[in-house]
Amino acid sequence: MSYRDVNVAIFAAGDGINYPTKGNVVTVHYTGSLPDGTIFDSSRDRGKPFKFKVGADQVIPGLDLGIVQLSKHERAKMTIPAHLAYGDKGFPGLIPPRTDLVFDIELLNFT
Image (cartoon, rainbow, N blue to C red; front, side, top):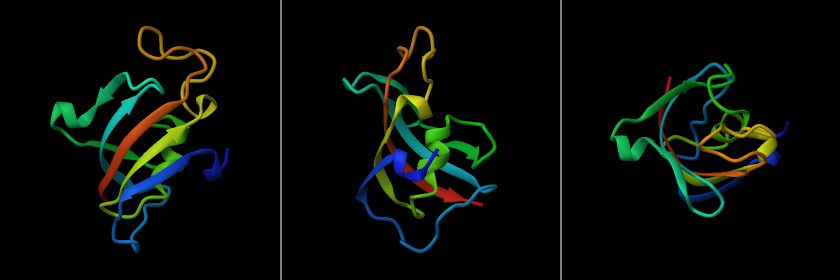
């Protein structure tokens, strides 16, 4: 697993100074979709940011690897390969097996 396995395309620059590290609790807004554009989850639609601890296996590995590449207030398109998402099993009823995932994700804050 490498940071290079997750493609991060910045479309709204952050502060360029403050980056989260393993152990930080990050607060993000995201919309997750399949490669065909089908949305499977969105904190934005719920109107409630999502929090997780970096490196604590609370999210798929690709999110842990990708979020540390964003500075505070940065927004990006993050493409996560299947092996760093739900892999060969997928997530039944929601994400097919061996499917890459695309996130529109914004790092709001971290502590």
